[in-house]
Image (cartoon, rainbow, N blue to C red; front, top):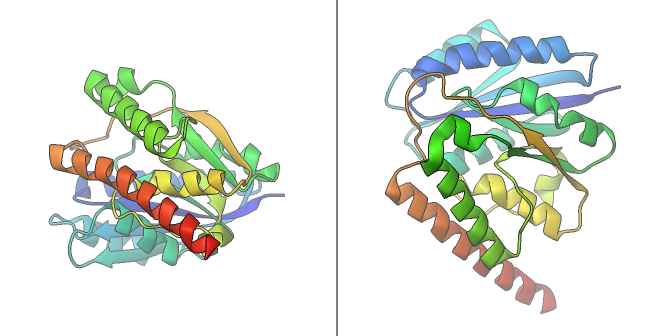
Amino acid sequence: MGIRLTVVMFAYNEAENIGPVARETLEALDAARGVGIDDYQLVLVDDGSRDDTGAVIEALAADNPRISPMSHGTNRGIGAAVKTGFSAARMEYISILPADGQVTVSELIKLLPGILDGADMAVGYYTQRRAVDGNFRMVLSKGLRYCMNAFLGTQRPMDGVYMFKRELLKTLPLKSETFFVNLELPVRAIRAGLDVRSVPVEVKARRAGHSKVLGVRRIARVGAEVVKFRGHLLMEKLDGRS
């Protein structure tokens, strides 16, 4: 017995990575059929890339009916790309993968036992970020966790890799347009009292290119999203009382 899973992969200027990462993902999902996964769909979202990412995605989709290609005319950010991928999901469960190869399907498979055991969501957290991405990325991750603890009361470690029941999207509204959307969803699930399991996963070095989330402006915007999300929660609480 297994699940039917949609994997959403979002990409911005990842022409070097999206092809090999998508093919490796398809091979791993095929290998997992009958061993936790009964059926699957891979949604590839091009977030307005300026390189050949979109063309690579279209070529991949033309060769494999399990791939659903999605595209933004302009770059709208990770949050928008993730939500576009969610809107194209057809399976009963959804997970995400970055197109840079830092997290592989083998790590997503580690989330399956909790889901098969009845959890509403399984959330991964990285165990060796410093060794892979260096001290700067580690400091940023710790800083974000501190902000989430201070403003949201969230102490549980989470790093944006998760698997969940698609039906949760009907009851958990997503407001963020940045990378924070990948933390907003599990935070909302935890606050709603749902069964959310935490699972250690490993992160690898990027296959090629450089990260798109380490610019000062992007970091500041994610920090602002945490504060804004706190405001959303307060307003939703007040609306619930009216």
